[in-house]
Length: 171
Image (cartoon, rainbow, N blue to C red; front, top):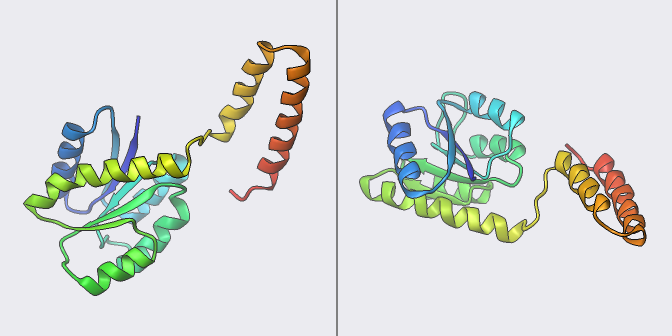
């Protein structure tokens, strides 16, 4: 199930986007919040596959907003959905890490689900085997229970090396 974070200060816009995504994407989970601070709180607790955000929230806007989201977004793509039709801002936002920039209109409401789908596919291609660290041990345990002794020895070496890498990895 794809997890989407929607950061939209305008309640009516959030409702429209959420309804369109639910109608067009099967099994999607959407959390929506009115601002960056609440979005960062959710990102600190959970991983999302895609983030949809207005270009302006009460706490930050434009490039500053995207940079703050990028720090916490993990592998999630960021799609900016905005009422501002500003080429310069769009260019700056894309350069700072957003994957797409969409002007809010009736027509764009139809394109948002397609953009989300495209970004989800891109993420799967870039990271085909994203396994949460907390699940890796359980997966290796299950494999060890079902293989021969010589394979178990190899798995234990993989586990040991993986644990070393995870200890060194930045959070």
